[in-house]
Amino acid sequence: MTVTAEPRRPDDATLADELADTRSVYIHIPFCRRRCPYCDFAVVAAGESRISHRTYVDAVLQDMRSEAPWFAISAINFGGGTPSAVEPGLIAELIRRVRDIADVTTGAEISLEANPEDWTEEFGEALRGAGVNRITFGVQSLDPTILGSLGRTHDATAAIQAISGARHLGFSVGADLIFGTPAESLQSWRATAETTLSAGIDHLSAYGLTVERGTALSREVAAGGPAPDQDDQADKYELTQLLAAQAGLVQYEVSNYARPGHHCIYNLSTWAQGEYLGFGVGAHGHRDAMRYRNVRRIEKYVELVTDGKRPWAGTERSEHHDYRIERLFLGLRRMAGVAVDETVVRFLATSDGQRYLGAGLVEVINERLVVTTPLLTDTVARSVLSLSPDDC
Image 1: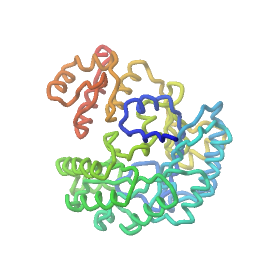
Image 2 (image 1 turned 180 degrees about the vertical axis):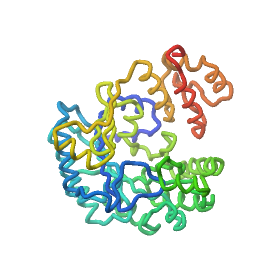
Image 3 (image 1 turned 180 degrees about the horizontal axis):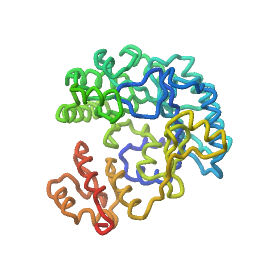
Image 4 (image 1 turned 45 degrees about the vertical axis):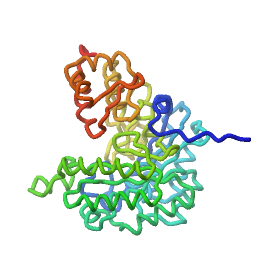
């Protein structure tokens, strides 16, 4: 009799630590049909550049050739922008190139972000044929008024149909949601979250709307428009925790929830300081204790790569102190927390650390430091970032 192992919980501490040794690839697809008012990512909206999808992908393929020798890869993540805005055949070419020049582990996670309005069965089948096994839809909301204010062009029907179609084809399916838009009521957010969860998603990422400098939203707020309310967002955050748990999803990071066995390997690896290569405009990478970021302008990216140069806008080496602080900062975002080491001990000895312990905001459980109230993780994180080399 064969015994099937139970899927691992996303918040499992052993899993969180194991994935520090997992290596990944991130590929940025910047193309979007329009620029959402809240978005500050490296995107190229329709009409903003003459660089075609084909030309851009050729540049990314050439960029990949410069990265050698490669290490074993356990996750490939297509982000954007809107990866679903390009032809599935181009996605397949990029995946083949990774497989040609790297050891992609058996059962590797290959994920892609998509807009609901791009979904068709033919599109999904082409992605499956290319090797994609995980898809995340940018649902954001199911309320038509909120979708309009966020600049989204799909409706609730398209979102739920896309989720259903992807599940039917065997993808691990996730949804991204945004809460706290000024016009959104608590009832509206509840309806969005409940309906999305009841569609059978395997993974949920839920983020509070933020006002990023240089965006259309920031200009609206600066001109006197309504801004997101922190108390409102806190209420919606706590409601999300409750609804996700009722739907069988386990919170494993401040903003992320998953069914057992459906955690995001790429995310858990980066939160554990795992190495990853980044390709495309605005992409970041981390290898051999060096972090780098690529240029954000598509024309400059293509020019540099075509000239045989690395398209880096900047690099930095992780000093010992910075590396330890980053480990604590990133690790405390996980429900699994961080294994107690010298840095943790010294942090807890600071006035902030003592105050958080006394208030029960942080605890040491099974020799790991965890934040007991995820909503307040940023408060703890700010104290971590303020630590000096003398502190730790």
